[in-house]
Length: 251
Image (tube, rainbow, N blue to C red; front, side, top):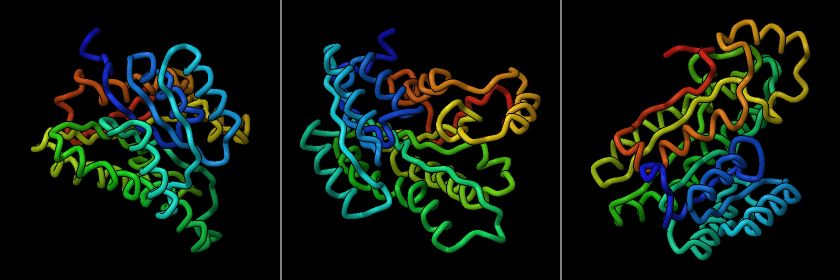
């Protein structure tokens, strides 16, 4: 459908070498976008993804970036602009996991979690938002989590970071919308990515009972929501956080 076409668009996806981000890179390329993406410490997957999509005829480029590091983000943004010319679509997918009881959280734990998630969204977005405003067009999609709403034990730092992303999305949406720049977010439920690795069989069984659909999400369940928000089909979504979660939370 032409409303979902990304032909002629230039997109940047952070955290794009695997998981939901990797699926977004593939989907955007399939729908006609030229795509740059970054990863952190995942060179083998990044190189394989870029090579496979390039061999299929798409224009896809990958690089490494710690989105919490200002100087590194500055360099990545310059690289993306050099590769793409401009960025029409920005998808902030980079993130980390890790649970720890609040009484055991260190300042370093807190700073790292908020640094990658919330600070990372800010550092990357500021390089492209102004240019989008000047051109009168842009799509920004941020990655929150359903845990921004429900919370979870052992994840105070993660939940705080994701809730901050929801607030950041809403505030920036007010500034972008009058200039043709839409800012939205997704808040996925439990999805089969590396973030679920290491969880016990008991936890997985318990969690499945809570989800009306009775299964965890696949990355292919999540990425189409991002395509919607990045395409002309999603042009009337402003400041929204969409929740593909199998009914785990009904907002």
